[in-house]
Structures are given as structure tokens and as C-alpha cells.
Amino acid sequence: MAKIVVLGAGISGNTAAMYSKALAHKNDEVIVISPNSKWNWIPSNIWVGVGLMTGKQVTFELAPICKKKGITFHQAKAISLNPEGSAEDSQPFVTIEYTSSAKKGEVEKIHYDYLINATGPKLNFDATEGLGPEKNSHSVCTYGHAEDASRYLTESIERMKKGEKQNILIGTGHGMCTCQGAAFEYIFNVEYMLRKHKVRDKANLTWISNEYELGDFGMGGMHIKRGGYVTHSKVFTESLYAERGINWIKRAHVKSVDKDKTNFETLEGEAKTFDHDFAMLLPPFTGVPIKAFDKSNKDITNVLFAANGMMKVDADYTQKPYEEWKASDWPSNYQSPFYSNVFAVGIAFAPPHPISKPMFSPNGTPIYPTPPRTGMPSGVMGREVAYSIRDMIRGAEKPTHSASMAKMGAACIASAGSGIFDGTAASMTLYPIVPDFEEFKEYGRDIDMTFGEIGLAGHWIKYILHHVFLYKAKGNPFWRLIPE
Ligand SMILES: Cc1cc2nc3c(=O)[nH]c(=O)nc-3n(C[C@H](O)[C@H](O)[C@H](O)COP(=O)(O)OP(=O)(O)OC[C@H]3O[C@@H](n4cnc5c(N)ncnc54)[C@H](O)[C@@H]3O)c2cc1C
Image 1 (cartoon, rainbow, N blue to C red):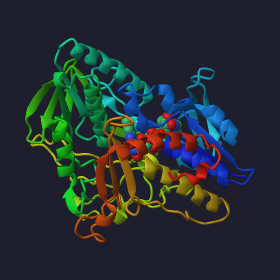
Image 2: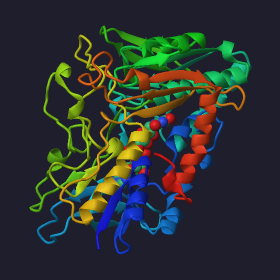
Image 3: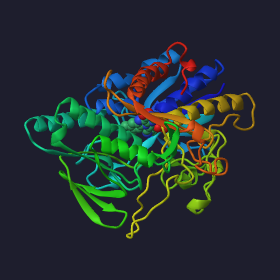
Image 4: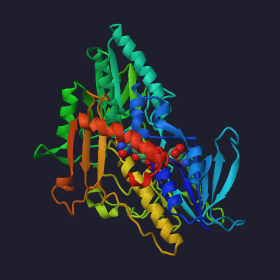
């Protein structure tokens, strides 16, 4: 009998757990540990943030679903990891602290044969003074944040209806943010709502980002095929912003957020300020803080995890100049190089290097996007790791399945307004996610498989996917037929 413990029940963790259970021998046990009682389809938080959906529509309770699937669920957070066990306990274990009201604060050791770390990001609002929903800006990273953002946006719209002008700022709240795509979707959905409420002329809508050029998205931008010609995502994105009258500030590191002011530094080193009435600024991500100890109780956190708190896996983490990194540096099977029964998937694994070129202001402030880890690759990693573990339980010496982001394509559908007849979404496919300039010398990607288009059909697909992925995440009949 093998015990597979999955830390996290987001896109990658839930996928890993469901596949692990589906592939397991009947005596194997799958345990999921997650501090939230609910699963959240995070991509639809954008619609919660503009009041088009409720938190309830983008979540479901995990405990009954796990029970139905025969998965043990603990509502708790992992606080430390002992991959060698301890002096008194020879089996590897993870220490968890319960967050459920019934057992809040209780600490327990959970033993494992295989561990999948799928803890996602820590939303690091503290990196920027005044940033975040508890301080002076809003977020759509969780459904709770998105519900709050929607309330404040509604108030702002009400003021516009009374004739007041409003300055709305949306984008990234730090020079080292990722997830520009989510902020992009939010600003376009806000723009759509302002038009719906007939107050568009009352809003100065401005985008702020750490990207060197619009359309970088942490992937160093991309060349896309569109209407028979090849264009750069910068042109595609700038024309979308221009068409909707959205101003933009790029190459910006937000230094602090006051109640009605955002203070930022530009790549040229200038200190600037933007007066805002409403600001939705995404935080930078780090890994979720989990300590690690060896058998003698020595702290090995810095061995297992990179400086950003994300877990090291089978990537090449050698420090090298930006120009020298290769697609093959990216991980393939997500196994820890130190403990063969430990894996990290989704946002929890440490990327080996940035994809967008690192840029620094004259003051030495880094201002560039960190690599994105979107839902589709996160789910695929969870699935492939589950297959590898199944094979390792059956005797394979090493992981049998791989899911390198340098060999994987992705489809992204970015909502730009949600309406059955007048909604739009920018649909993009790219291959591979991490550019490979050895194989695709000109653009780093296969130009025949990298395209972008905007239209109503994209919105319908995005809306259908919302329902399809909730269906799949609940493990309803034939869930495995739905791709990640
Ligand atoms: C607003 C927004 C919109 C997005 N839109 C899209 C989109 O349209 N398409 C797309 O592909 N991607 C999108 N993304 C990105 C996508 O949501 C992520 O790629 C995906 O959620 C990553 O999955 P994950 O499993 O790594 O992390 P998550 O989904 O964040 O899951 C992490 C899990 O770990 C749990 N956890 C946290 N701490 C601990 C701990 N100490 N112990 C145990 N468990 C812990 C959390 O509670 C959670 O269950 C969006 C992101 C945001 C923020």
C-alpha cells in the first residue's frame, strides 16, 4: 500500500490528486491537504471582480467531492517537511496545521511515500508598501478579493453615474510580478462594464505594468500569425488598448500605494505618481513558505527551495547570463533532485530563469515580468506526475512521464468583456510556452502553431470552459475525457 500526499487543491493539486486516485491500486491512499475548504476556478474570478459572477459560481466545497472520490481531505496548511523523517521517526512526513474551524491550530504529522507539492503562489502583497485588499488596492487573485473589488468598482461606477470623473488604474503592483494576463483580462472587463453602464466617458482607464512592451506576458512577448501575416504581440496588444481608449504605463515598478495615489519608479529611474480612485494591482508571487528539515533536524529549506520559496525540481538552476539559457534548462518530470519521492507542480516549482529579459533601473530596481505558469500547463504537470508516481509504485526507478513547458503548447483565452452577444475574448495559442531558439531559430516558437485572434467566439469558448472545468474538477462522470 502506498500513500500519496498532495499539498494544495488548486488546478495542479486537484488534477494530481484525482489522477493519483484514478490510477492507484485499491489499497493505495491519496491524501489532499489544503487550507481552503473550497476549490476555486481562478480564471473566472475576473468576472466575479466586475460583478458578472458570484464567488459561489466559481467555487465548490472540496470535502464532499474528495469523499465521493475516495480521497482523504484535511483542511490544513503544510508548515514543514521532513523528507528523511526525523531522529525518532524513520518515515518521511509533512507537518500540517489545521485551518478548519473544528480543529483550528491543531498540528499533525502526515506520513507519505510520495509527496506532490502543488501549493501555488503566496500572494506577496507585503513586497509593496500599501498594496493589497487589506490596504489601499484591490486584487482578483482569490474569489474573496474579487468580490471586494466588485463592490468598490460598483461604488466607483455609481459616482460616475452622478457625473464624477474616476481614475482607474489596473495592472501589476510590483516590478517583479507575473500574471499580466489576469490583469489584462480585468482591465478589458472593466472597460466593457463601463460601456454597459454608459459611463465610459467618465473614466480615465489606465494600465500599469512591469512589462518592457505591452503583450510581453512574462513570456518575452511572441510573434503571432494573424490574418495571414506575422506580427508581434506588442502590436496586437497595443492596438487592442488603443481601440478601447485605454492608456498605458509600461516598464514600471510600483513602490507604494496610498489611499488615492500609486507611486512608481520607471525603468529610466524616475519617481512618478498616479492619482487613482480605484486601483486593482496584482501582487508578486513567491512560493508558499514551508520549512524543510533533514533527519538530524537541520534546516534544509534553502536546499529544497529556491530563494523565491518555490521548490527546486529537475531544472538546470546554474546561474548563467540571460542570453545563454536554453529551453532544455526547463524541468521535465518535476521530481526533486534531492528526494526522488518528492515532486512540485504548477506555480510551486521554481523556474530556472526568467523568459522576459531582466531589466534594471539606474537605481538597480529590477523591472521585468517573472515567468507565467498558467492553468493548462499546471494541470498537465499534475496529471503527468500522477502517472509517473503510479509507475514508480509499480517498480519504475525514475519518473516515466514528462511535461516540459519547453515542449508543451498552450491555449489562452483572455476575456475582454462578458456578454452572450457582445462579449469578446482574445484567443491565443502558442508552441512551445518556453521559447526554444535552437529548434525555432527565427521566433523561438513554431509560427504555424502560434496565433492570436479576438472576437465573440473566444468569449463563448471561455464561458463554456468555465462550466467544463468546474465539471471536471468535481470528478463528474467521464472527467478524464476533458483535457487539462
Ligand atoms: C485572476 C487570475 C486569472 C487567471 N486566469 C487564467 C486563465 O484565464 N487561464 C489560465 O490558464 N490561467 C489563469 N490564471 C493562472 C492560474 O490560475 C494558475 O496557473 C493556476 O491556478 C496555478 O495552479 P496551482 O495549482 O499551481 O495553484 P493554485 O490554483 O493557486 O492552487 C494552490 C493551492 O495550494 C493551496 N495552498 C496554499 N498554501 C498551502 C499550504 N501551506 N499547504 C497546503 N496547501 C496550500 C491553496 O489553498 C490552493 O488550493 C489566472 C490567475 C489569476 C490570479
